[in-house]
Length: 262
Length: 263
Image (tube, rainbow over all chains, first blue to last red; front, side, top):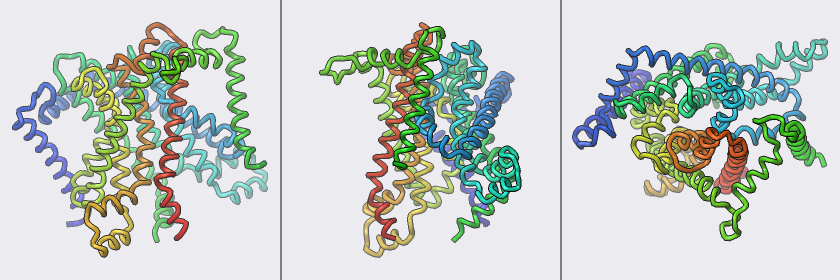
């Protein structure tokens, strides 16, 4: 058996084993199913949701906010990263400001942003963008600062403008680092999107779908079903981004792998 | 002189930003943006103006800030215990790693806030529910990093331990855990950001005290001072937690830098 086949087989076995074990323990142990539903009940509930239009509407709403917020964060993060990465004195001057702003959990800004914008979807996008900005910005600064100075100096001596240099040299060579930042930002953005939808009033998306299930009569199984489905969605989003990263930056990954090899 | 230039510039930028903010909002024309002076004075009177016997904490601080900090701490401890124990097992036993891989990736992909309603159902309103939510968010980065750290222990170290007939418990405590420690610390630091988000979300959802609860109330009464006070407090908390982890990491791993230098 090849290593890949072994990995798939054992992985599938692990999933089945965990599922079967939980099913058996909860069933044989006589645990209150209103509190700990059987895994089969949760899966049944998840399948029902997949056939339910309102679940898909909620998913699309969450993904829309996710894309918008992430897009703003990437645009802003790359632009700021370009400026701060090329000017080390500016970067060192704002570092303490960034170190203070970065740990603030963006969800705590929700009441303030809601009051200012008076619009729930806009507020959600703003908070997603704030949370997703930091990983993009920090990776962009790092990537830009790592650009080979010989290349930028060569272009400068040929009379290229700073913007042309940024476009032709700095951004392309920093792009793999920025892509890593975007991947981290994407998962942060997904977490913040759901969090904002859970705690904000009048929000759309998976978080508010979950709130409806919470106040419903179907009990606890739908809550776990939403969690499981959003986990699968998270896996899917990550797989898409990792796939894109490896396809676009194949040359970079090959080079770093070669550099890492002994 | 040169060494002091960067910190001086950073301090200067902070002062300029705060002064500009004060100038822009000092006249009180904006209903949403409070001047820094008002925020600081509010925070002092609301939280740090208490009797000396309570370390100058007010009843509002002991009633809301301390419970939040306690939940953070309990959540972080539970997540570290589970994450390190399970992570070492998965990292050291190859079959276990292969069996658990899809499950671990799936668990990590679940956005932790979606578990809050389930924990609320399980534990009802109160500290166990918030601690469980925080622990669920922190456990994944700790687990993944521990797996990675435990898997990549230098084979020479393990062979040496075997040659000296060091038992499995000693091998775990003296070889594997110290070797994985830098990774474990890195996982915990990643987890702190998640812990702060979950603290706020879980206290918004089901709490009768805490910072998130205070802000949820302030939202309905349009109490801008509390909203801004909480934002600044959480920013400071994040900075302090990062500092504590950085210092703890440096102390716990001091031996490692020493040995790296010797090599």
